[in-house]
Amino acid sequence: MVQRQDIVTNLSAKSNQNAKIIYPFKFNNLIWKFNLNNAQEFINEELKNNNLNSKLHFGLNNLLEYLNIYFGLMKQNNLNNSIVKIYSSVTIQNRLKIHTTNSYYGKACYSNVAVAMNLEELFKYLLDHGICYEQVCLLAKIELEAKNLI
Image (cartoon, rainbow, N blue to C red; front, side):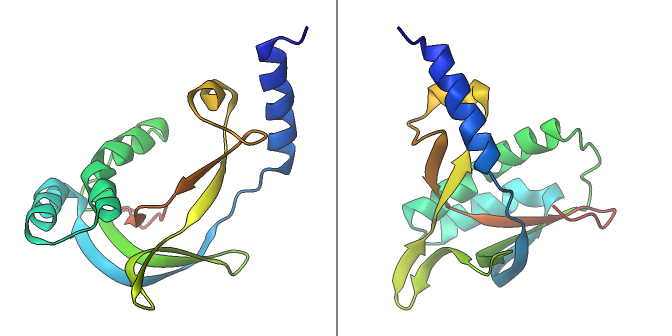
């Protein structure tokens, strides 16, 4: 009898061998630009004043929470005067485009992406051979004060 942990370990080993990190090549179609110092005010105004669809609303509404988690993991403390830029698409390293827009040739277009999961996260999601598929709600580029880009 195969134990669940053995299955997870085998799936994880296989998926990590095939996992590739895809880097952004070029961000396209700037939607918003704001300073991280007043991000909450900006986001509240946009959520209140614009007729955003549910995906973009979700992305904006959760942006600061996810940035806090990310910067905490990266041990990045000095975020003063950092600039947040939100785009509607990005061309990635292999020349494919990822879209997050309400109007791509007149229709909403939110790209699906595959995410290789680490061992701790495997039990939280439905997976296909260690790969989780999600839909992109927001594309953000952060320019740190020291001119380091992430």
